[in-house]
Length: 204
Image 1 (cartoon, rainbow, N blue to C red):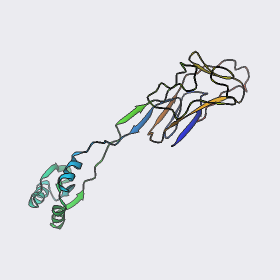
Image 2 (image 1 turned 60 degrees about the vertical axis):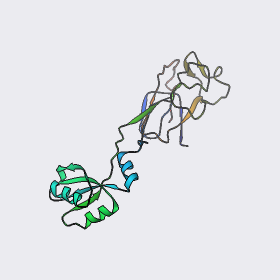
Image 3 (image 1 turned 45 degrees about the vertical axis):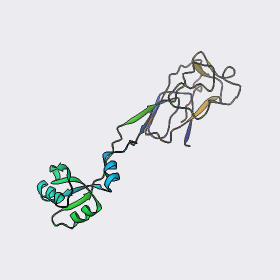
Image 4 (image 1 turned 180 degrees about the horizontal axis):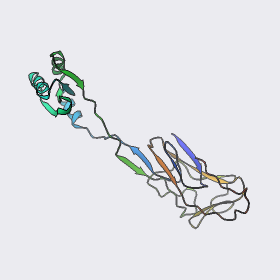
C-alpha cells in the first residue's frame, strides 16, 4: 500500500496528489459499478454503439435503417446519428458509400466523489484513537521517545496533543493510494516560544 507519514506539528496546508494527514478529505473519483445501458445491449446481442455520419442527419438515419438497425439518437450538430449495431450491421454500414462510422467512446465524468476523513480529535489519551470515516494504517508513533500518550514530552491530554523539547514529534500513516485529492487541516496553539530558535515543523 501507498503510505504517507506526517509529524503533527504546524499550520494548515493543502496538498493535491497522494499526500496528507490528520484531517484528511479524500476525494476519490469512482467508476459506476452498475451496468450501463450500453453494457446491457451489448450483452444481449453482441452489439456496440456507433456514430454514423453523413452529409445530413436524414441520410445517416436512412443508412442505419437500411441495415436493419435502429437510430438511438440524432446528432444534428455533426450531421450524424447514434445507433447500436451488430458486427454484421457495422460491416454493412462501413461498406456503404457516403457514410462514416465511428465507435462511440463513452465519456464518464469524474464529478462524483466519495468524501472520507481520517481523523483524531485527541478526545482520548490514546495513540490509537480514530473517529473518522477512514481507518488509519497504524497508531500514532512517537518520535524521540516511546513512553506512551500520558507521559513524556509528547503527550495527548484533555483533547490536545502537546510536543515539547528538541527532536520530539509524532507521526501516523494513512493509505492514499486511491485518493484524487487530499486536504490536511488542524488547529494549533503556541506556548513558551521564548527564542527565535524555537519552532515546530510539519512534514508530509
